[in-house]
Image (cartoon, rainbow, N blue to C red; front, side, top):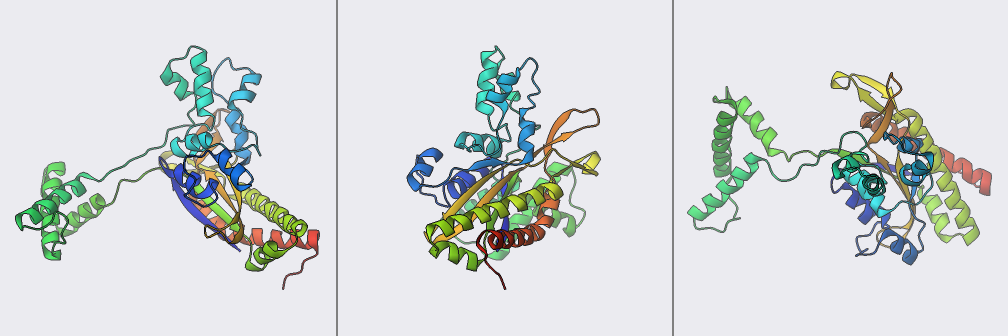
Length: 342
């Protein structure tokens, strides 16, 4: 069995979910909606999972009736995941029902900015794109170098000349930023290293993939339909067991200066997609669970606050979660089908 963890970035992170996860590990979905895809492929729709879903019903807006909460804010566990919801939560860090919430608020007479704010789950994601000023200046210098030498704009440049150009530009920008020359080569090298990295983007969530051991996957692929269905149900049950373990041991956030204190949250919010073949079309039972980076914390005054999931416990839990999934799958298969493992 394997349980792998893949980090999802904000902004276009949800596109990975739609193109590679929700759409059955394929990029050939075209303009179809997720519902169209599920219908055409005979796949089960993705479903919402996690104890943290209950916190989405806490509107933070005055004068909202329980009926409106249920109809607009609530995301029931087990309900179908839509493309619009994925874009809101994993793309922008908003409530999955952000569009419905904004429309409801506008209908009540709220200005656009207030309507959008009602769908916020804490701070919006920070999304950065493009190159640093150092990288931009270096690209210009490389083009000018090649032009002076009568070469194509993207022709390879000798290492010693690249190093010279890099050092020259770094010294100029360092002096401009700090009002002095670098103290030594080490300080200059540090400046170059920092400005050579692409700007970071907030983490939108984590994609955990659960796959049975080869023997189980093979049996599932060749077994009669009733046995195959039973194996799949055992797989689903093992995934549920593993998620419960993760929620119990890795649903934390950090508060205080520098995140000094680790505290409990109301639970995780996730989407689960079970697929039955690989990108190559071979039989391959597996489930993707995308865990949102948004978690709710109840402070000392009883006020709900939306913060970021502490990712370190989740990473540390992966080996244990994998072993638990494997053990629980064997137990479910033994109880349901009488299978034995050596």
